[in-house]
Length: 304
Image (tube, rainbow, N blue to C red; front, side):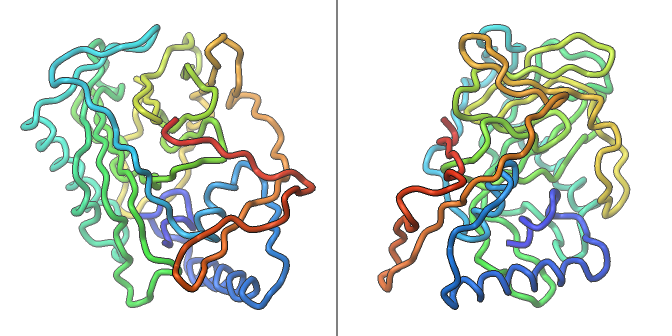
């Protein structure tokens, strides 16, 4: 569960910070159990992570769709992609695992071993050795921290993303995303050039600094942009991407209306987080007042 406490769960927090965050979450859970009001106000941009902490991890029922191996697939202005063969997928996953082993913290030895490849594909037209050409999508149970301390809630199913440049270098080898049946944002970035989309989003673009806007590839809830990767990670690297602002991503609906731009994001809005209660039989049911002020955080089916 502690993978929810920072942006990259398999990298270290500053000394003492992990235990501080864990203690704060445990205090919050104990306070709720003592009967304090269950209405939680959160910035809408952070609602998804908080929801998973309060109600537990959810498992998505739908699986990623896979095109026939070797068959180009594209829609609208999206870049053309080609699925990797089983042998090439296995080789990519092996390379990704080796890189993940090198950079992850000691409390997560040999991560992602339980994850099974769902899909691996490459952008057909990418030739620049610095640009991400290939992606691996895998799914499995989140790894438990090997530090002798139990998780706050049991780890759940999730996705693992790993990318490789056209030059053969692994870009970001340890990107995680929970298998959420619902999300509170219509678009989210989980890596420099990848993320998730839901709701009314029908098109996603990426615009590197000084370059024209280009379409990302959409695959059942995920979007992937063929842009320069982030390589050269040191062991246990945990700094934020210093060049993230150089890559502006936008979302559009089916009518071409811009829904979101990372260059001019909307101000975070307060909303009321829904919660669930668990009966003696273990069944979860929605709880809380029928209306809320501020209103309830929006929810979008994912993958939509």
